[in-house]
Image (cartoon, rainbow, N blue to C red; front, side, top):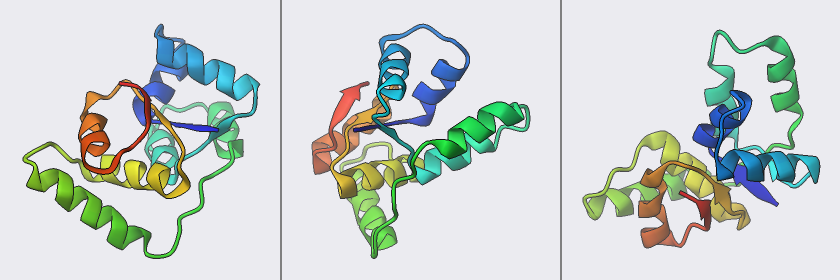
Length: 126
């Protein structure tokens, strides 16, 4: 099972090239993808997103938010910021979801490396 970051989903949806888009395509075929709620929110925020694409995205199984998620996500972000690294709120929420469920994250966004260093986030690509 894997999760994909918004950057990978956008590349995939735009038929972009890249190893991450190819891996996402294969994982979708194999029904091995779960959706991070924050990623779904980011994707659905595109006013130009076709309704058929939105429907398909909503059908991807959603990762459950566990109790005390918000506290753990805040603590995770604080650890990254304490190392003087970039830690956008959305990235911290995505990382915490994956950490909570021990699910690797497929991404092309190098900012997630800070979460690898601080908390052992499993990245498939960056």
